[in-house]
Length: 105
Image (cartoon, rainbow, N blue to C red; front, side, top):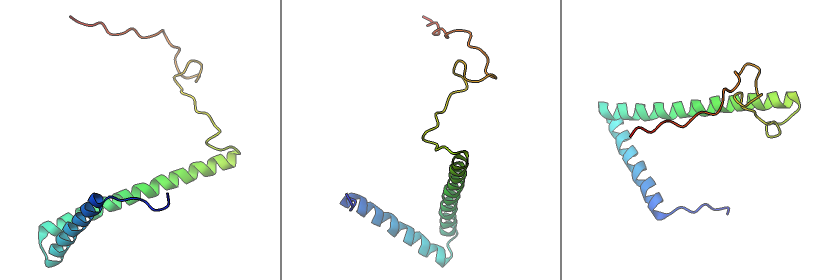
């Protein structure tokens, strides 16, 4: 479906949140310290989320370039657990299946 469906409840909630943010922003412009702190806190939260998205995008692009340079795609490569039997020469051999814990009665 091309047009997303929003309920009236969600639109009214969004309108209420935006109205409250506008009220706090107007108090910040009037010089109230609590409003300035609230707006700066919300702004810093938005900056942190944006920086996280940028860092994730850079890491994702680097892995895509690595797979393109290696000549395979990440969807075709199969990962393997280093703890699987015979998976890694550095992993110690399995001693046996773990026993279930004893139930104290």
